[in-house]
Structures are given as C-alpha cells and as structure tokens.
Image 1 (cartoon, chains in turn cyan, yellow):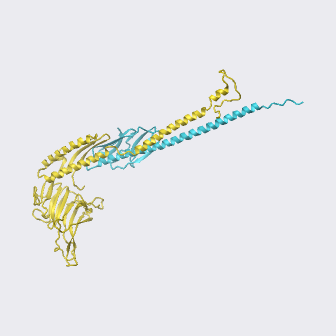
Image 2: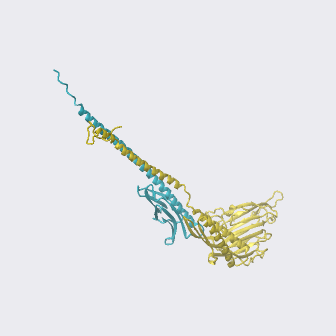
Image 3: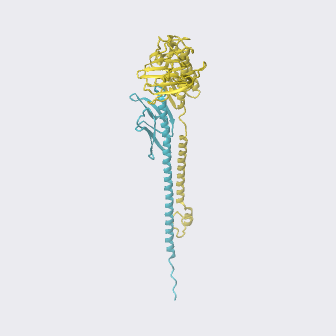
Length: 162
Length: 368
C-alpha cells in the first residue's frame, strides 16, 4: 500500500529565500545609494574648493590692484602723498567659508587663506613702495592705504578692514 | 518596485488595528529611496549655491577699478595743467615783482579751486586745491627772453659768446624761434668739416657740459663751383657730458619767411618730436636739457652772431645782469622776475578713495 506522499517542506525553504532576497535587495540598494551620495557629496565638495580658490584669486587680484593703485597715487609727482587710500567691499565669506588676506614680503605677495576648507593661494604685488609685512584683513570692506610712518618714517603700503 | 522596508512577509496576519501586515508594509515601502532622494536634493541645493558663488566670482573679476581712483590722478593732472598755464601766462605778460606774481597766482588758483570744487561736488567728490602764495611754497626765478625776431642771439653788448645765467638750479620752458640760420658759405675752407660753426646752447654744470647745437648743412664741395654751398637741412644735435650724441634734421629753406622753432624742454622741433631732445642715454634717462650735468649750472650761448630769432626760458635763480637788460625790452635780450615753480596742496576724496598730497607745478621742466 502506498503510503501518503510526504509533504515537502516548501514553506520553510521559501521563507529562507525571501529573507535572503530582501537582505540582498536592501544591501545592494543601500550600497548603491550610499555610493551615489558619497560621490555626489565629494563632487560638490571638489567644486566648492575650486570655486573658493577662484574667488580668493579674484579678491586677491582686486586687493593687489588697489595696493598698486595706492603706490601710483603716492609716487605721482615729485612729492610723496600724505594720504592715499582705496577702499573696496568684498563678500564676508566665500561659498560659506571666511577668509583672510595677508601681506607677505619676500617676494611681495598677498596670501589669501580660507578657514574651512583650509585653502591658500598667493597673488603677487608689484609695488615700488615697500609693503607692510604681516598686515592682514578679513572679508568685508578692505582698505589699501599708505602709512607714511609705518616703519620709523619709512612709508609702507598696508591693508586693513574699514 | 522592490520592497525596501525589510519586514519579513512570510504570511499575512491581522494585527490589533485590524490591518494585515501586507497592507502596512505596502504603505511603509521606499524609506531608503526617500531618504536618499532628500539627501540628493540637499546636495543639489548646495551645488546650486556653489554655482551661484562661481558666477559671482566671475562677475567680480570683470569689474573695473574702484570708482574714483583714476579720477584722483586725472583731476590732479588737470590742476597741474591749468595752474601751469596760468603761471606761464603770468610770467610772460607781467613785468612785476615776485610778491605781486605770487599774489596773482594765488588769486587765480583760488578761483580754480572754487570752480573745480563745485564741479567735482556734483559728482559726489571733494576736491581741494590750495596755494597760499607764500614764498615757502614758491621757487622764485627769472625769465630770460628776446622778443626781437630780427635780432641775432648775442648779448645786450653784442657779444656772440655769452652767459645768460650763472649757478641756477634749473631752466624750464626753453624755447627758440630761429628766423635765420647761418648761411654764410664764405667762412668755409676747402673740405672743412668743422664748418660752419654752429649756434650752441650750453648747460655747464659740476658734472660736465650738455650742449645743443643748431647748424645748417653745407655741401663742402659743390661740383659746379668747387665751393661750399648751404643746404636747406638744419641739424639739431645734443651731446651729454659723456659724449653721447643725437641729431634730428629739419628742412629750413633759406627764405625770409622760413623759420625753425625748437622747444628744447618740450622735445620738439618745428612742432614735431625731435629725437635729439629726448633720445635715451646709456643711463636710461632721456638726453634732454641738462642731461648728465648737475645743478647749479650756467646757461651759455656760443656763436650767436650769425643766427637771428627769439627765445624764452625761465631759470631757477638769477639771470646775468651784465649781459641782459633789466625789465621787458622790445629790442634787447632782457630778464624779468618770474615764478619758476610752486607747490600746491591737493586733496581728493570720494566714497572709496582718499588722497591728499602736495603737487609741484613747473611747466616745461625737464626732470632732474
């Protein structure tokens, strides 16, 4: 006599397969989405750094131009000027980061540094009147001026915030 | 869509709320994608801000210089020109004392300051020009001139070689108008290359002598008659103490109505640029009046006899009273009081520019 056919344990197998299926789908999806976000975030960060650098170059070029203009104002003619200043307003922050413009001598240049991310670029300054080494200004309204008494009577070009 | 919520759906059971697990899970699907989409949206917003900053940076980079920074020098140049022209006019048309000249120039400068100040104020700028007329702001000098164009370039005693001024600290606006340049061919011997003798303006200083000569070209051996023949070309030659020399040539026909104007300090001859008067020396400085000499220097004429014309100059110092008439003379070389240079107070203030300085005005002066 034939016995009753044994019932397969299909329910238990299917349950394992579905669990595996879900784990795989969830895992792969999470990996893909995470990868997309990480890549996208890195791309945006790279772009941000590039934009900050180009903005710092632009701001530095303007400040350098203003310093050179003050140099011309002071040296125009036979008598040195007593007052010569050129002011210009810039953004307080560049793409979300604050920044500092600092004069460095040897060679004469402006060092522009951002805080977050920490980036540094330099812009050269061509001036006959010596620059005041270490003079610095942060973002906002920056004045480039001539200080006739900066170095014990020997005039210097200086930058500062207004 | 795949169910990304992760609940295990082996079967459906009914919960306390009467809904099946299947129904709940359908509603709770897609959180990972939702979160991912929100994060991506935030990333795009940040990217948009970055692009915006980049556009602003490009815009900033194309902006011009700070408004008004050029105007400060431009207005300054206008002031120097205007006061310089006033000074030249006063010197040329006044036979009066230094004090009187200062007062007149101070009055003219005050009028200029008022008018210019009003004009600049309409553009939102404050411009000030000040000349108090003090001797401290003024370099006194004397104007030396000859107005008789038919007279030769000799002293009032008809000396051909003579000194116009001794130990002066400068000479400016040195101008000649030759109405006759030596054409006498008889003085020249056969192939005498030093012939004819030129007219020479000498600036004789501690470091040597700078000279400007004016000489008509001669054909030293004319094929027709074998004698020297004057040409229409006239050479203007400058030489510095180091022996460096430069020449420019102008055509001056040998007719009564032809003349040769030489603006020595302006660097032109007959109105055109004369390289001899501003060619660069080895030192890099132009070969202009007094180049390579030092002050104080003497101003001398040599061989003025065969040359006619008028001339004018202002010297920083005293003219030679023994060779010149005192006061304006219509037929003799003379000297009068003049202002050589003044120092103005100049100020220019705009919204982004501050500029205060002193400006020296000495029209027609070759820099030292």
